[in-house]
Length: 525
Image: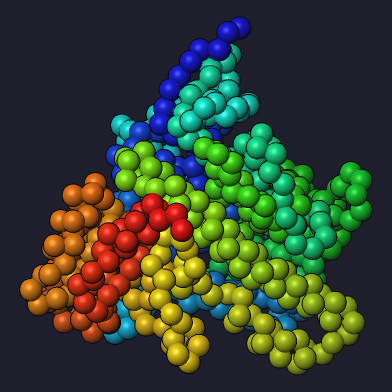
């Protein structure tokens, strides 16, 4: 059957968290897109997503933070992690994460505007999909399967199959973005390989319900049990659990339910098994994040398994790529702008991979030492050294793009110490400030660039006018607020759409055209 032609500015493959965030980011910048998703119904999974503070700040820009919090798992519940020998012995080591509560702002502006949020993966997927359905700029095609791709002139053509009719369609797009997960079809079409860290290890996840008294909730807290090489999570405290356990050998997996029974010594009847999935525990990052007008985002670019309980890296991808695609389509972005997507985001994924690898190695080291007969006291010392360095929920709030081609560079501090950089260092996230009237400064930023102006005569207005005359959209935020002046240590600071600082100055510059060329991607040398 001949393919029916369709056209769109951006074709987004996949309507999960990444694809939905990308589509909503594009709509935030008034760019229409088509999203194709093979699943007719949203995600159905028992897992919890822990959205870090930085992700919640980015989603707040899209009007989603409050809606997500309405679906949040009880934020007053602390999280309890028990490192133990088995279900019959008390924990060797116990860690607790305090309840999620809003926090006071610090004078240096480094506190995040939003605390982290815990929400079921199903509820998050439902909220994001509902948001796409409400937006007239997003053409959501559920039950449509992406099957192939070819780059054609200045754009690309994606082949999709409409499940309800069986018709094939050729979708011509200026840009195509693969947000289609770890087994990305888009990545395969581009023939982009994965850079793996360490050997492959097969794992299996078993979602089950148990009435064993040793697995009953002991407190109001959410429980995670580390038992040898297994991890058990109780995301909701209602008697359902998710067990992650390694699978030996390269052949067909042995019965994971039987393995779970034997390893834990619990009675587990078949009707109580709610789901079983297998995955590869390799930590991989794509060698490239795209080719030509086609890009990868989220798990398609960095399939980190086991799937972590946080999606911050992927949400950061979607926002970063989204505003840059919009800039190109709206005509003010230069060629270096889209090239900076891979430069900024791949380096972050490589850093995240090292942190995840360290967490996995901590788990393996605990297992080996426990099997070797290490004392509880020794294991406690190990956990106290390792765990604080791998459990920082606000890790992404400190991520910087200092070496990006679209950030105005500054010399390193004279002492060479990264921590001595000021709060408005180019490439860093803008400082968070609560203004005297109680509002958040982040909420005053425009959707595109914003020039924060602390000069006494609002001298930045002339810079904004010059930017607009060149077609660069820029808001002018002039303020004399004392809270801003206490931590914004330059009178002129240019903030990007993703709330990262692109440039700053103590005086009105005489090279403003060069600054604009750099931050919009038009500087080619």
